[in-house]
Image 1 (cartoon, rainbow, N blue to C red):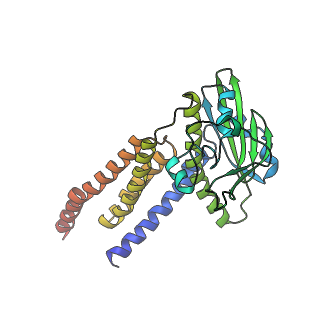
Image 2: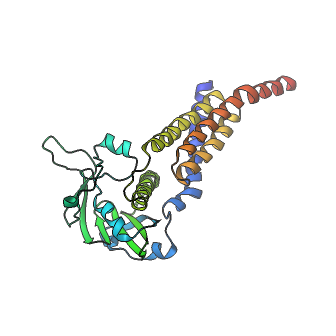
Image 3: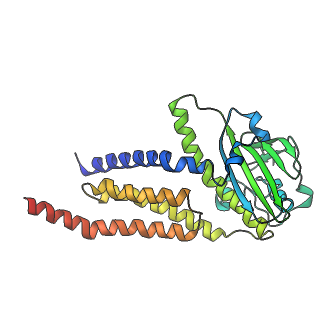
Amino acid sequence: MNNTLKSIIAIVIVLTFQFVIYLLFFHSYIVKWGATDSELAMPMSGDLYAETSSATHAIDIHNSATVVWPYLVDLGADRRGFYSYSFLEKMYGCEITKQMKENDRKLEVGRLIPYDAPDSNGNYNGGFHVVEVVQGQSFVLKGWGSFLVNAVDGNNSRLIIRTLGNKPHNIFEKFGDSVFDALHFIMEKRMMLGIKDLAESNGKNYNLVSDLIWFLGIFLSGIAGLVMAFVCNGYYKLMLPTIFYTIWQFMLLILYPKSIYGILLVIFAAALILINQSFLKGWLKRLISEQN
């Protein structure tokens, strides 16, 4: 068996094991991120529009519900985007405006909240339709879920989002749903943090550069994890990538998206490769020669 085939097999084993780790340790956390037991159990208006809920996320915002609500009203590619990773949103066609427009600050049943660029005629086609609204408090988007701003007191509120969907009917749908849960959580968490930042800073935009550094760190270090399977020998083909990707998942799913974490992941991945190339490989050769 040549080294390339061994490396490919190692990658498959490592990624399979990482998926098991994700299901056992991370999935239950991300589908109820920030939500209390009472928030998880409470009925929300959108529950009637789907077979089941796949996630309930919540976050404290240190400002009043009346301040938070206008940011939710401005969701959409035709308004202020989705407050998530703006460079990804712009690539997909979302417009990010600098100032909130009073005449656009309406949310009514039937409105389409678009998620992509308009067609050649300026019409938006893809998006989420508003199917229910309680002005100043909650709304439901078809194809997404329920949004609720709960006033804690005059200066604090809770933003709660419940994602709705259909029950999986087979193992393939369950696999797809679990992957979707992770991808959806990464984007929705950033959106909720973005709304929190804007509401608490009276409209100050979050740091685009920090998001870019974090995203590049996640991407580059993820590639480096695959490289480990090709440059490492023996048991290290499995051991080092497994250690690295477990930490990678923790930083991706548990910690907040900050540039320092992306940088640390790149440094950690490079350090593991360097240690393998300069120390472990030499140690392994010496051990084999001594045994012979």
